[in-house]
Structures are given as C-alpha cells and as structure tokens.
Length: 138
Length: 304
Image: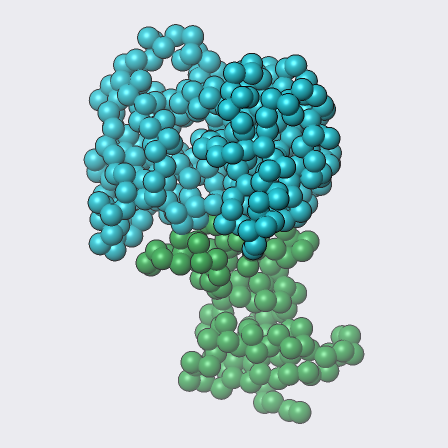
C-alpha cells in the first residue's frame, strides 16, 4: 500500500498496531482540513511485525503528551520541503492536561466549571496515571 | 510564599515534627499563644456538615486570639447558586486570612488552594483526604507512645473506604520499624494499591486478619473505625460483621497495658461505652489533640 510522501508535515511512526485510531481521535485529526493518512497494520521494517502510521500533510503542532500517553515509544518525524528535519522518540509525559477526563463521579472535576483535567504519572513501570484532584487511576 | 495543606504528605517529616513541637508548647504554655492570631480571620467553609471538625477549627482559631467567619452549609452559601469552588475561594480570600474547607467532592480543597490567594487547609474532601485528622492521630500517638517508630499498629473496621486509615498508613509508613495489623471483614480489606504502593513498596511488614481478638495481644496502637452499613450489599452481612468489631472491656483483657485505643469519631457501636473509662481509651484525647494540631497548623500557614 502506497501513500504519497509529504512535503511539509508530520509522520507519526512506530505506533503499536491498533492504537492509531485512538491517537487519531485524541489529536482531533478528524477535524483537520488537510490530507491525513492513517495506515493500519503496516509492516515494520525494523521488527517485521505490524505497526500503525499517521501522516499529516500540514505543518501543525502535535500534542506530544497524547502520543506519550497512548503509545510511549512512537516516533515523530518532522518533514520540511520533503526532507526529514527532526526525528523525536516520544516518552510518557509526567503530566497530562486535558487529554483524558477523570471518570470518578465524586471528583471535583465532575462539577467544577472551566477546570483542567490533569493527571500525573505515578508509576512509570506500570504506566499508571492518577487524577491530581482525587487520585483516581486513569 | 503561600502554603496550603491538602494531603498529610504535603508536610515533610521535619515539618510534622515542628508542628508537634508547637502543639506541645501550646499545651504547656497556652497563655503565650492566646493573642498570636489577633487581627487574623479564619474562614471555615463547610459544604457538608461536620460539626466536630468545624468546631475544632473554630476553637483553635479563637484560642489563638483570632476570629472566625463561618459558612456552615452549602444551602446558605453562593454554592447553591452555582458558584464554582474556585470563585468561592477567590471571594473568601478577600475577607479572610486562611481557609479551612470541607467539601463532598474529592479534590475540592486542591481547587480552592489553586484559586485562593490565602492558605487553604483541607478539612475533608469527600472520601479522599482529611489531613488534620491525621495530625490529631499523630500527636496522640506521639503523646501516648512517645515515638512514631517500633510500633505495631492495628487498624480495625472499614479499611477499604476509610480515608483516615489510608492517611495514617501513609504518614506512619515514613517512620522505621513499624508494623501494621489490618483487621477487617473480607469485604472491607485495605485496597490493594495501598498495600502495594505504600506497604510493599517500602518493605513494611503487615498482616491481614479478620479477628480483632487474635490481633489484640500484640498491638501498641489500635485504631478503630466505623463499619458503615451503606457499604454492604446485604443487611445480613452487615449485621454479622459489625458485631465482630465492637471493642469492649472484655476484648481489652488480652491487650497490652499501654495499648493506645484510637477512633476518629463519631463512633456508633464499635467501641462500647465501658471502654471509655479505661486508661487505654485515647479517642477523646485525640479530639483535644486535633485542636492543638490545628492551632499549630494555622500558625505555620500564617507564618506567625
């Protein structure tokens, strides 16, 4: 399957197969008025296994926290004039702001207006994030 | 710089020591503190009823020579008109010098602290934290046992939902050579994340049991909590289990002579009144200690 190379934009690569759609949704890519390709189950030349890839034909800024939360280890390639100018491996962020919402109905975030939903990384090994307000697990 | 206390872990062990030292000094020299907060106002914002905690804060401020602005229930406050916690905290910051806030929502005190320009003390945020109760517990343990280490601490009753239990474990886990005996019905055992993240992580020994009688002889501290009826799915289980955790004079016969019996109060049936006159009953001393620690905390946060 071939997707044209992009001139100016972003390639999110090495997404764990199956997580591409979640990243697509959390980044709000459905609302963009530019070419976006979500490739599922592409063959990884590194591992021989499957991976997802997202290509965005736009010089937009990407919320790296979303990537690090959903799939730590993805790489972001920044393309300018058809050339790779930056390659960045995304790690788990220490804090997540307004990426996910607290599901605890007893949490103040369920009633307080105009409040940021903030989670902090409390256990890197097990990838545990907790709400900073009520400490409920994400 | 403005400091607030939302969680007991907001205070370092060194700060806890300093608070305890202040509280002990207040006990010894109350006259020296009687005007320390003159001209200062404490706002007690209680969005759910808690008479004893509110009275404790207000008594603390009055004994420091300060005054109190009190909101005792949400129905009489702007919250009933839909005002956010943030806005309430900003408004009250214009009137008072320090806030003590009780709110049914978890994390409400943190939201208030972020918005307020004055210190905020969490006086209970739903089932989440109640740090000044833990301060009361710690001063009681220090006064009764002389130290925070080398103790076998029994926690009995509702260990699953009891926020005072979780806070006390968090606080005591920072000191060496303590051991916990977790006494609860199967349905109300300490949550695994507390066992894993706090106890196991730090290599703190603990045992779980359903029998208060078996655990009793080895305990230095016994922290009783109320088994709450509403936590049970069926009435039969509740009735069967609540009776196993009624501490009475007979059950205390096998206890150490210097056991310290504590309870965050209010009690219902879990400590029989025949225990009240036993010198090992410390739960009313705990109430008094809570007032002294709140005085010490108010002084610290007002930097007086």
